[in-house]
Length: 415
Image (cartoon, rainbow, N blue to C red; front, side):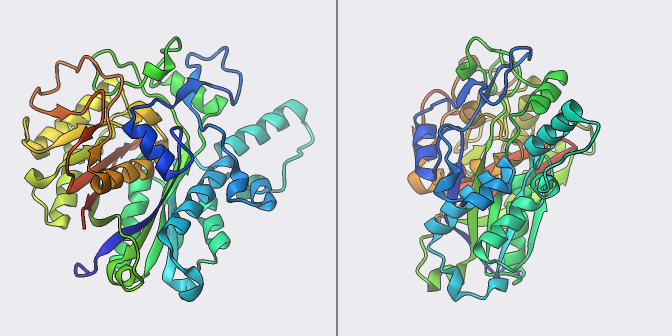
């Protein structure tokens, strides 16, 4: 199993910073914010009135009329990003056995928009129930993986992972391991989320988890800053094509990076708060690096989970210092949620893409809005703030953590 290598041969992205991988990457490197006033519903009476929404999204680029009609936005986002990733990979699906390619997708909430709209319609127009016949298939959390397999005729392993905001890394890890076990030649993996709905915003507001900096939304997500006041929610999707190395090499595929390790642990601590000492997160990073055969001193970049919450950011810093020390010589850290917002179950996928692009391009995306680093963060940690930084990246890891105590880490290496 360990002799089988797994590489990334295709990428697809639909994010608040752009509707393609190239647009996403360019805007991330430029340090742009995706935060805007909410347009998907009237937020007048909400504590938070902004989010990182998609801009000028046209599903018809990759989806036909029936696919749009029968799917929730989270599935549309998944199909869109997966289509770009397949195109990017150059994978000739028709020349392969359909049982050699699978889909392992992720979504923390599934069809929240569909559920909310259908129940709202019933509440307003009852008592006779009139529900859309596509209500259930649009709503359920596994439908994105199912629809991707239908779109491309893929008959291999197919399911959806759910581990809250660690979901995408859970999906990537499973795809990585199934290829190493010889269960597939390739996977479409990643995650999608469409959480900008009135119920979702109100729910997170009730938890006091979201920023309320309504006068300057583009500055609201400020991970590690002493004045951070909560996360900014985002929407979108990220897709990766994971492929067995020899198969990719034989067909002359473009290879972005190698997946060298992945791990999950649990905090076993709290339903929504991370462990204050970062015990589970630290161990997950250690396990991922051990599997990769990489010493912590050889890691160049950590794309942190860092959501811009007062407790969560410090918990992650505690985990990082446990693994890498207070002043690691090579390590650079950044928090891309400062630009994209928090895409919940899709966060790991879009952040994996940024980690892989950092390896490919030798550029570390910045943490924007962070001007006064929390005094509890060791001064020896090099957090890339303000502007992107050019430097070689040989090894990058992507951190994700989710409600329920889920920790999921992916490690990538230059090839």
